[in-house]
Image 1 (tube, helix red, strand yellow):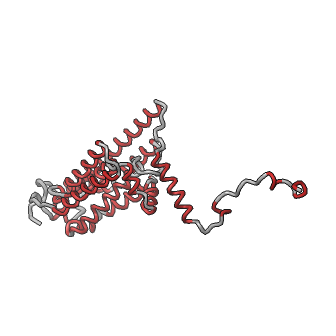
Image 2 (spheres, one colour):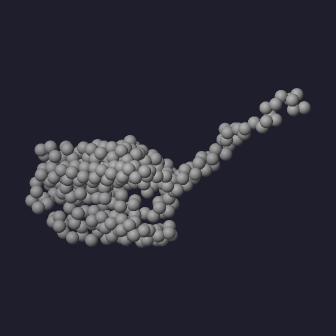
Image 3 (cartoon, one colour):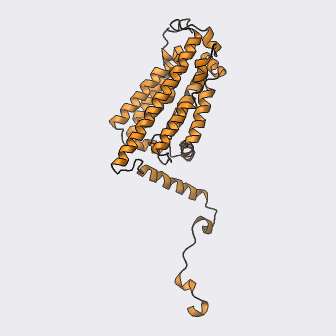
Length: 304
């Protein structure tokens, strides 16, 4: 590492990974029948944000010198890239990726707001502990692991909100708005600690090169304000838009959360899997008993 936080680094591995993801998206979307213009633009935006978050200069500043830069990087990984990528996948491709039973089980559980809040909070707090921040500053593999965990946490965060995942029991529009408000408060409680702390909480940023002459304590306070303001702005805006769309749908007599064919297919697939898991049960326990025939209801002497 150079002593200057602005020294250029190519981050060749990141460019290769993002380029491979772009190629995989192109091939998979073609096999799934093609992506719409809106989906393609959303996927491209997600890949561009990935390059912004994981390459020079933001990645180097987040690693060497600034907690604020690290927070901006984390916000892109949590709030920016996952929803753009999820909305950029064609419906057939999403159905194919979530069809394996293990993946389908995880998606169904993560669509529950309580589980999503718990998972995001644990990952968000764990990746900001002092050992985790020190590890990402000193080890490339630790950095890759933490960035991957944040991306997965972002997918979990948006799973109860987005309708692209088939067969998920999403909450109502009001429930989604309440969930997003809770997500904007609970996982980011560390931001309050940063704002009111009077000494640096991360030794790595306290001894590293200062960014633009900003002291470690002021950088820490700025990180708290950025984390809180950006999280509330993004999630509350999505909550407001979700409520507005639901209200417009209700006012025009439409269902704000219509059942899609992909949801029906996924429920049928789950029913088939349940039947295949219980072949040892006698028909009495697997299926309702057949309705009695009229002859069965008559007494033996009447049948004769």
